[in-house]
Image (cartoon, rainbow, N blue to C red; front, side):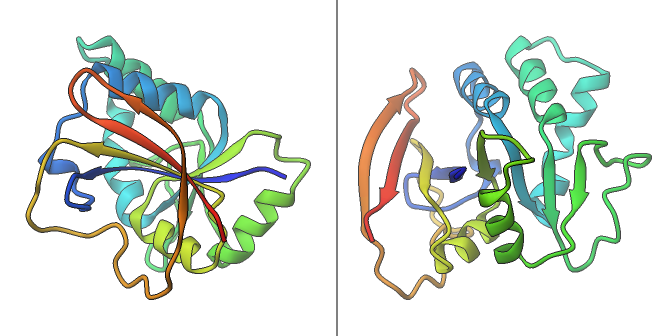
Length: 190
């Protein structure tokens, strides 16, 4: 059975806000490798639309190789988008050919992906804060990969907002970057 992995960037004080830190070359390389080794990534509408920035670099590469490599990796990976407002992922406008809207609930889609033998054998990543919260409440996350940046934001959207049940996690490894960010790898113990 494939694992569902919550992989997200956050500040030291627990907020998910891409505007308060700048990923460096190592971070881009790390996430490009993750995406190359995954079967799919799940996004909510807001994160999906935010990540569409990377599509512009596929057609018009930047001068930074790590950003371009990440853009190619995210362009290729299948993306499943959960939205109540999007009608489609419109590849002719700003969407990706590799993206589709889910027609199921988050729970139904994830259970199907975890058990599917047709989709592949690699892991499924969750890259949206809102989906991580939903899947955490459903006990459907097998691993957390929290990239903590050395920034205190002071405000924003907390990763673990509205989580009412106690969840105990076991630290299984860490990965440090020269810029001070650390990826903490956890598995739920209950």
